[in-house]
Length: 345
Image 1 (spheres, rainbow, N blue to C red):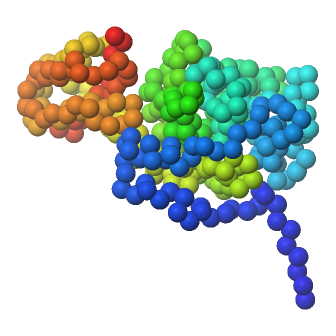
Image 2: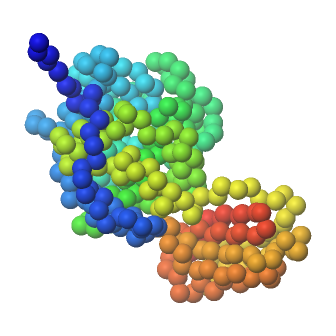
């Protein structure tokens, strides 16, 4: 008796290649991020539009509807649409840059603008509604002319439907790791705020919400299949945060607050933006400030300042720090304060 097995690309969950993540053992913060960058860079790049293999062609494979192989599944809605309707005078589907391409001003250039690890099929009007907004919790349900999306929208943020929140987070984590400013590529970084006017800065938010989505919506077989197709058939690199979800915690975990602050405590942190120093003052319940731990992290998750004190007034000298975004973490008693800080000049 003979049996024949027909295997489609979407039905395989391949193993992570042996040795692919060698050198990442016991690494955290920027050291891990840099090691991952060196693993996933130098991948094969494809054009946005071409008569040979381009992004349209790849998305038809990576996002194929397994119940209807002639269709693709749309990211923010889950709707299934004929794969051959490439835009089709606004009657088809579009290619959504999950990391908004204006956040780094890379447009549709080969590289960041065509990296299919962070490109997904999307309904055209839903894509337009998402615009270039940061990802964050909040807003009203967005009702598209085509139907209810389960996504939420504010004047400057977009919350995807629950079933793809983790997908979105892991694509953002990938982009921030893959593009580090080398070889004329953008230097993409994740920040813990929503920017109402991004002005082409290579920053994307909101870290704390993305991190929570990464945890609450774990990696699915769909993502694993997609990761395998991109690696084995096209780009030759992988999304590390699909293969090893724990990498996100090791890189960004220190930058995300997981505890609440005592409402009775009045704590002041200033100035912000800062230049030469940061000052911290506690005006209530000062007895709880025994063995207070203060840490300042850069955007890579590395500690640049640290101290422990029992004082209610704390000065942190910062004249040696470069312009940029930092994250302040203050731990005292059972409380934790997490504050984004900025050096502008």
